[in-house]
Image 1 (cartoon, helix red, strand yellow):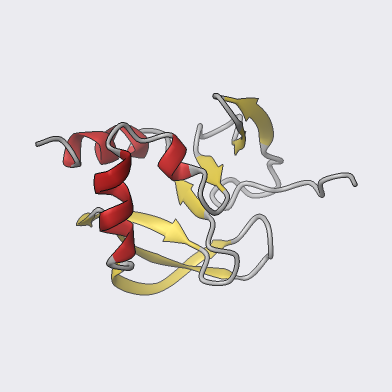
Image 2 (cartoon, one colour):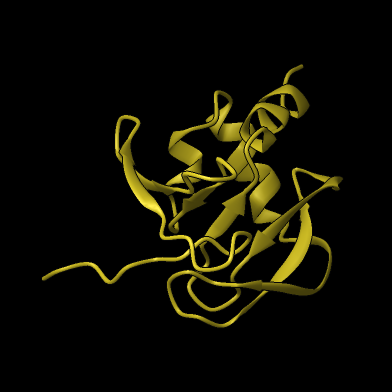
Length: 113
């Protein structure tokens, strides 16, 4: 089954490109943001257990977002992830997460002891 084209939620009309980083994920060739399907982000962070514990608490201070999910095409929410000041786009429907270019590094720094 072919995967439908996914567009960047930040760069209008820009298809995401498949990239392999130990697993396949979608990255925007313009802004460098990445789309993580459910469960993929925990494979990318260094402190997996701390990350899973933080995510289990749910989105922090969520508010309606303007980004559209590249998978289910519904509005995403904007919420804190790991820390309330690290705002990311989350899809409440398919549970995917959009990270801007440098946010993965920020997550790793926030999870350091």
